[in-house]
Length: 209
Image (cartoon, rainbow, N blue to C red; front, top):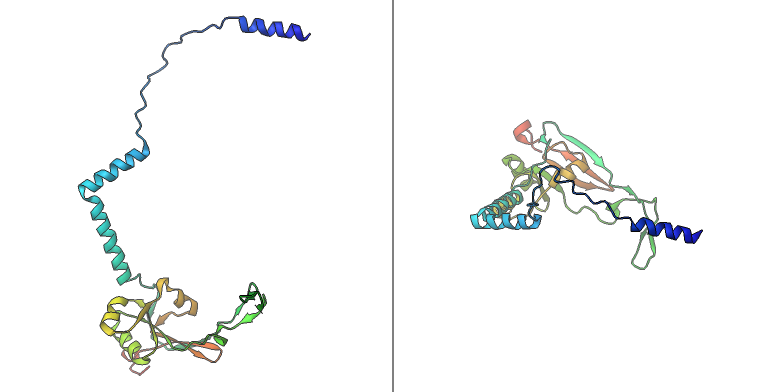
């Protein structure tokens, strides 16, 4: 049986193939697509020669410098027209164990920890609009050692002009954290909580803050 199968297979292979030329079906075009990297290199070379690369670099530098000098203002804030004060409890519940350098357990998961117990807020935080002369004057007058935090304005220009360190609440993260809606605002420690207050300036109410 095996021998018969081998003979049959040999006969099939021995049959000459019927090769035919079916001609050209449709138009045929040569491959002319350029290599992608070559295209990029050519484009960059042309940009370099035309000065476009230098122009783009200068524009990027200008925009970056402008953003550093004057960050995006925190949206949604208004000048305070009514005094508001509340307590903010910074206590957190630990989601994981806190261990020391040698693996010793400091705080177990689920423990409620108040950061003020170990790291007190030694100075006030003042939030204000740096483009508002009244708010700026208030911030400089309230506490010589306070941290001055802008929500709008040019911190570098103010540092140079006032010889004080100014910060900026990028993205309004602190404003949102404390729930501040109006300016100027002050955050200071009161025992184991933080006292947050929105201050009405004399120019808006006729009374001293």
